[in-house]
Image (cartoon, rainbow, N blue to C red; front, side, top):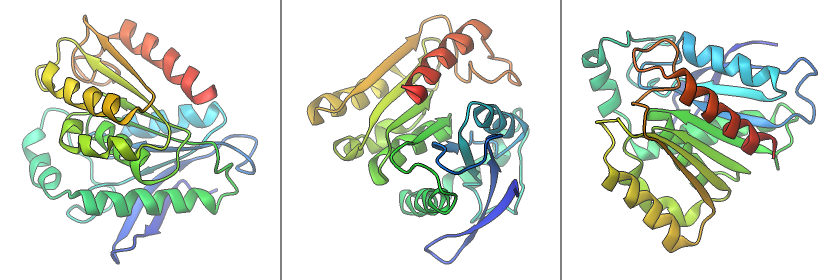
Length: 230
């Protein structure tokens, strides 16, 4: 089965994606939308996709910068300056189209469509929240999703429970940003789990970044799998 795939998006663009498949095949497997950090569908994201596939999921990780960057573009973790123009080029409308194209691809793989989840890291954490609001998911998961507060009005549309992870030492995401999200969920009466690791920083789950915290990463993964397998 092809790991490097291309999807046609409703706005006429073509989006590359990385796919990972469970050993048992895709028929009747649960599905997982995996959303990248701001640095592309890089080695770390592909490794996560492969890991979740070993847990029985068919996984798709779309390249969210496909409108502004060539296929396969990755950025160094030390070069956020090169990311900025692509990050600023994202729109909610474009992301929604990308989410729907990825979700539709899962439906072609004979996935159990009542067991589709989303997960995202950094930029992808915000996108995972957006996905939970626009396609029918069993649950969504967001790791340190900066900017999620900017789309807190989507909380009322969440289809599944949502799990959030934050780093208490994260200087990029403030307590008031998190509070904006949880307040919107409370007002909408939505189910969620909100976890802050006081001893962890932004990107604590990525073992290829300086802020990697193995303890927090292990604990977060355990809860992640509980939600995905629950």
